[in-house]
Amino acid sequence: MSALFGGSGRSDQGSIGGMDDLSAAQAFAPSRRRWLAGAGCAAVAGVAGLHAGRARAAGLVRVALVIGNAAYPSSPLRNPLNDAKAMAELLESLGFEVVLAADAGRAQMLAALAQAAAALHGRQGVGLLYYAGHGLQIDWRNYMLPVDIRIETAADVPRQGVDVQQVLTAFQRAGVRTNILVLDACRDNPFGAGGPRGLAPMDAPPGTFFAYATAPGNVAEDGTAAEGNGLYTRYLLQEMKKPEARIEDVFKRVRLQVRLATQGRQIPWESTSLEEDFVFASGEAVAAPNARQRLREFDEQRTTWARLRETGRAEELAAFIARDPQGPFVELAQFALDRVAPQALRPQLPAALAALASRPPPGPGQDRYRVGDTWTMAWTDHLRGDQRELRPYRVSAIEGMRVLVNDGRVVMDQMGNVIENELGRRDPGILMVPAELSVGRRWHSAYYSHPLSGGAPSRVLVDHRVEALEDVELPLGRFRAWRIGMTGSLLRASDGADLRATMWVDAATLWPLRTVRHFTRMHRDIVEMKSTEELVAWQRAPR
Image 1 (cartoon, helix red, strand yellow):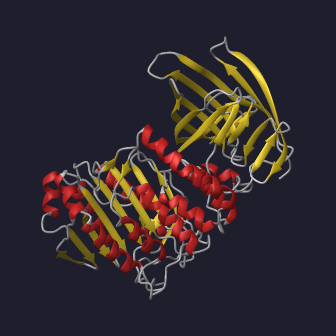
Image 2: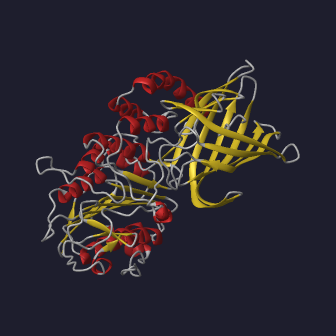
Image 3: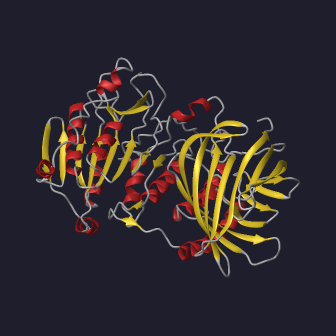
C-alpha cells in the first residue's frame, strides 16, 4: 500500500420515560438512591464526595440503573448481588442518582427502569445501566434475565426477559445526552434456550457507550465467593475510582487486567459512539490535548516503544498501554501484545458480517500479508487533470513483522503500516488499519516523516474514527468495508498542512480498498494534495 499521509422485540416500552418533569422530580425527591428488591422499596441515604459536589454544582444530571440478579432457582450465581451493591455505592459516591434493583423479577426490573427514566426525563443528563446476572442473545438481541424467568423454549426469552434495547430506548425517550450500558451478563447459558453463547455484538448509536464483560459470543467468569466480586466488576470498580479517569481509558485498562488475569480466556469488549471523553468522577467532558501536548507525549513514549517493539513481553506491553490508553503507540502495542499473548477466544462477528463466519478476517495480532500477495492500486491526482497512474505491489519477503514489498523498495509491517517507500522513511510508520475495528472506534497516531531527499523531517498527528460498515463499489466489484475518517496535521519547520482523508478497509482481509485525500496548506487556502487511490487488481497467496 502507498503512504496514507505524505504522498505515496418490543416489551412494555410505551409506558417508560413518559413522565413529565414534575412527576420525575417527585419520584426521586426522597433520596439519592432507591432500592427495589422483590415488591418493596426503601430509601437509603446517599453519600457525596468532592467530585459528586462538583458534578451537582455544574448542574450535571447523572442517573444510574443498577441491577444485580443472582438468586435464580435453577442456576444461582455467586457474585452479581455483591457486584451491584458495590457498583451502586461507588456511583453514588461519585454523584450519581442510583436506582438499585436486587434479585429482581421482571416487573421489578421494569419498574426500576421506569423510575430511572423518569429521573432523567427532560434533563439532558447521563444515563447509565449496570447489570450483573444471567443474560443471553436470541436473534441478535440481548436480554437480561429476571430471577423469576422460566424458560422452556427460546420463544420464552423475549416475553420473560428484559431487552437491553428497551433500556436504551427508555433513556433516549427521556432525552439523555450520554448513554452508558455495562453488561456483566455473559455467563454461560444454563437455560437451554438455544442460540450462540454470551451476548450479541451491538453497534452503539450516537452518544452511547456499550461495555461487555467479555467478547460477544463468549462467556465470562463469575469469580469465587472468597473474592466477593466477579472478575470484570472487581477491576472495573478499581479503575472507576481513579480521579479524572476518562471512560475509554477506564475500560481499556479493565480489558488489559482481565485479559492477563485469565491468560486471554476472557477479554472485555466495548462499542462506542461518544464524541467526547466522559469522566466518571466528575461527569465532565475532558478537552482533547492540543498539538504541542501530543507531540510531547509522542517524544516521551517513542524511546520506550522502540525498545518494547523488539523485546516487549506481554506484561510490559500491557503496562505500556495502560499508562496512556489513548497514546500514539497504543495500536502498535496492542497488535504486538496480541502476537506475543494470542487471544484464547474469537469474538462473534456482528450481524452485518455474518457472511464471513466461515472465513473470518484475520484475528488480533495475526498476519495480514504473505509472500506472493500482489495488488495494484490506481492513483488519481485531481490537481493534475485527474491523471491516473497504476502502481503494482508484490510481497517479496517477510522478516518477522516487516513486510518487504517490491524487493524492499516498500517496507510495511503486518498491520499494513507504511514504514518506507519512494518518498521517505516513517518512524514508527503510517498507521493504516489498527489492531481491531468496530463502528465508532477512535484512536490516535503520530509519526516522523524523513524524506529521502535529505530535507528536514516533518511530524504528523492523526485522529482516526470508524464511521460506518458499508458496501463500497470498486472496479473489482462490491466489498463490505469499514469506512474510516481521518483528520490531522503535518508540521514542518516553517509551515504545515491540514490533512483530511477517508479510507475504506475490506472487512474480510483488513486490506485498504480506497483512500481519498485532501491536504491544504495550514492557515492558507492552498490545496497541496487532492487524490484518490483504489484497488483495481489483487491476488492473495493461499492461506
